[in-house]
Image (tube, rainbow, N blue to C red; front, top):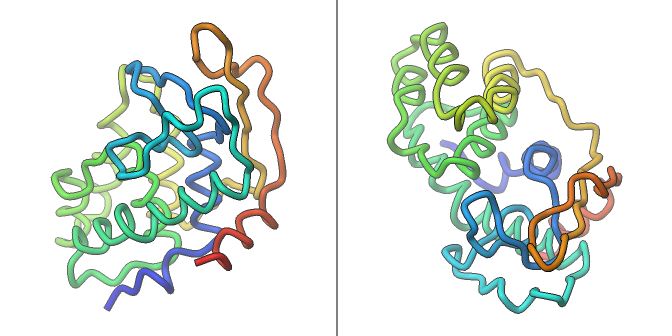
Length: 190
């Protein structure tokens, strides 16, 4: 049986964080939804407007993001795969996909994996949910991790400041920071 506490590791969380980027204060995402941390919105149950013009610590942003992985997204990934036994790499890839799309319970690639049709599942994952091509490299990385155990993250995560008054992330001023120790602390905080 798949166990969230065994599958959700700091390494898996860092793989997702590498794809998401970390923003320590409230910002407007590409859909103009108020967001914070690793893509956390009010829909998660954690109210993010409190971080508008009030940046959090890295520690707090990771604690809440890991809490969501542990209590919402991770269990939904496990439920979607049912009796299929996930490896850490498979779980990390599926978690990244679900955290980004929210579609783990309705996407065809998961059913194809459960049927053993791995070539078709990989092809589906690599060619769907691309957001007009913007997410093509993310889907390829997720497929490489799920089907080939190819990890991309080295523990460094992009941290973006917020441009004002637009409240959009400033990727031009972003920096890469090693968050391995911070992520380990977030896991220890349970």
